[in-house]
Amino acid sequence: MLDKPISPLRQRMIDDMTARRFKEKVQTDYKRHFDRFVDFLGRSPDTATIEDVRRFQLHLAKQPFGVPTVNAAIAAPRFFFNITLERPELARALTTLHQPRKAPIVLSQEEVIRLLEAAPGLKYKAAFGVAYGAGLRVSEVVNPKVSDIDSQRMTLRVEQGKGQRDRYVMLSPQLLEWLRDWWRAARPRGWLFPGKDPINPMTERHLCRVVSAAAREARLAKRVSPHTLRHSFATHLLEQGVDIRVIQVLLGHAKLETTALYTRVAVNTIRVVASPLDKLGLKPMEPPPPSG
Image (tube, rainbow, N blue to C red; front, side, top):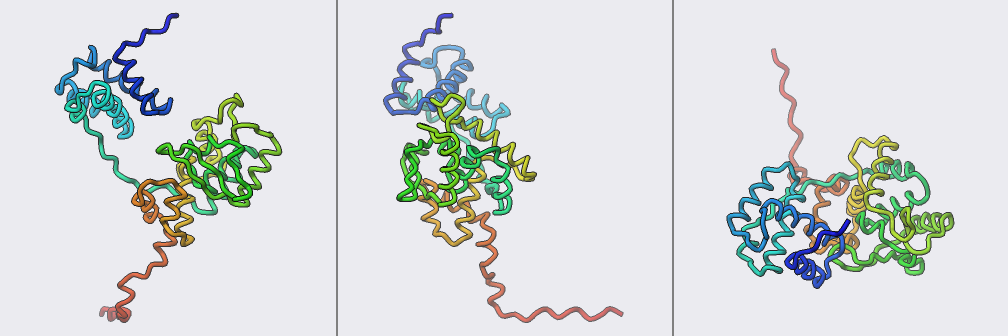
């Protein structure tokens, strides 16, 4: 079967993304969402009008999509109109939706222990340990190479994390032991956690499935994903009194306000704060006199 030819306009959009060094996954997502817009329009996208764009926004609003999906579907045509077509007035007609910030789900230390013990083998115990012990995103857990481990400096290098930024995170002695156990058992050469085909790393989806299965095995009532371990890492550090700016660096957050979200769930930190009511020195309330 012959591949469908790529139109010059679509190729130009691909070239614009390549010139800006968009990752392959991002380009794939943009092309998929842009195709959704073209299918809705029913004609060449360079003929779109502001009214067409508004109709597309309304069409998305009526779909049972979550906020991230709607925003992703909007990002692709906005890029096309702003960059490729150079018609920013059309891009301005597309507005992203605000997603309410929910308090993250956090495991207690006892729940983390149960989850780690339920990991099915050395490979996944080490991967869970990287997620919790270093606070990495799921995309960062599956991508390290063996050479990223620095046992002399006790650091783990995160290459091209979110925002295409490199950073170093802590490597605890306990985590180093688990990684050594895994290395001695499997001798991975390139990727620290290779997939079925050792040429590629373990996929994010596979790790998510394994974490969910381990959570069920550990009989955890909470909805658990690899990101839950990252949330728990940040919250537990905050409860231990680690400066929030240090946690920001470890997590790779660009903005402090993103890290500050964990102050909403750090119950140990909240619990030790003295209420101003207790500082008033009021006497206990007298019990009411017995009736009758």
